[in-house]
Picture 1 (cartoon, rainbow, N blue to C red):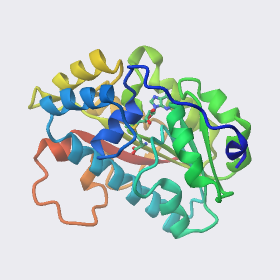
Picture 2 (cartoon, helix red, strand yellow):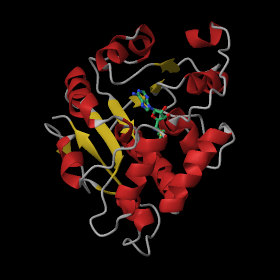
Picture 3 (spheres, rainbow, N blue to C red):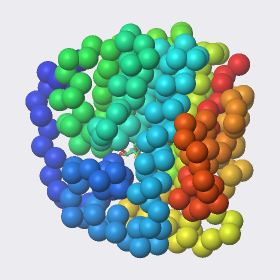
Picture 4 (cartoon, rainbow, N blue to C red):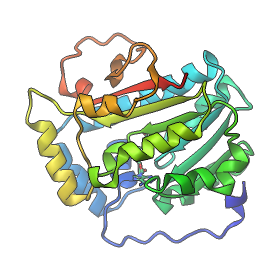
Length: 270
Ligand code: SAM
């Protein structure tokens, strides 16, 4: 991986929180600063279930990658907004199913590259770049991404927990459309997103906290989320609360905020 040959970037605590580090707090990680913990605490004050929700998000990622690698024969994963390395990353799950699986990680936060490449040093089928998905063409044309992902063969494009960090005025639909058009038929698109709770003010309150303190964190309606899958066939069970997507354990209560606040699904490009 060429990234390993570059000098280590210095990540300074500039007093600005980032989504990658706030999420790291939610996953009880150690790669975060006081300012990130402050945003996490303000968020947890309005939605105490957020740590549980972050775990559900990691778990659906594992189930989707495992399913596509084992059942659908997918060997290439473009993991956009991949986040800081944590317990069981995409390549670990994919390569467990298929040792030849290739994964390109992309994240806007340079701390992800700094922490990720040390872990990926010995893995030629995995790469990590710093890039902004708001410029999807640049991501798709990046030489390191192109070196790993063959866009003439099916790809799983992963937008797990990232689209809520794209504001409406930044046109998330255009990002999704560009990505969908760049991959051949037989590819998959995997999305999870914060989803509006019709019966609780918590989701709007969380959106207010995140937009004011982090600058992103857009909670979307089920209809808005469904629109991202335009032109794709949703594979069963469709767009559902994260723990209900092909669960591997019994969900005793599917009515809680912890279960329902994030929803997601996987679309197949025919
Ligand atoms: N995908 C991982 C998961 O689901 O466990 C991490 C999700 S984390 C909540 C969102 C990630 O998206 C962060 O690491 C953040 O830096 C990244 N991100 C936010 N905006 C981005 C952008 N415009 N381009 C690339 N990455 C972005």
